[in-house]
Image (tube, rainbow, N blue to C red; front, top):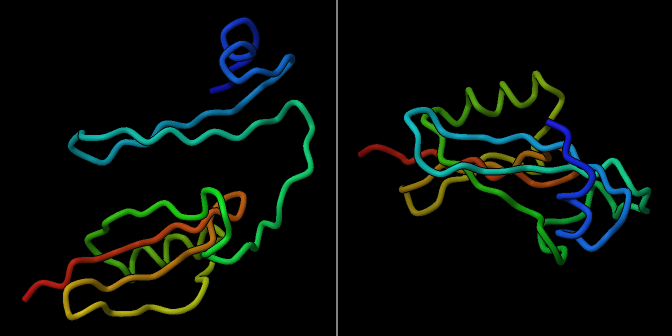
Length: 113
């Protein structure tokens, strides 16, 4: 959905701003995640390939039930792995995917014992 005008300008401290917003909610409810991308005013973006330790918002994480399926789905949409798939202490299987606007999406699958 697009947001602009009398509501947005005073909230963000700019005039003539416009943003596209999408709301994500996990199946079954729970928390909602809002992602926004400003289309106005023009700005000079940072590197879309910034490393994981770059200052600012670099990473958003999601727990998934099937990591390999999630990685394949992301790849089908044009978003590739930053590195590879790793395992943390036999508890989590994880991967970083480079998502929209260069944000790293961390995907984690709990390893069932």
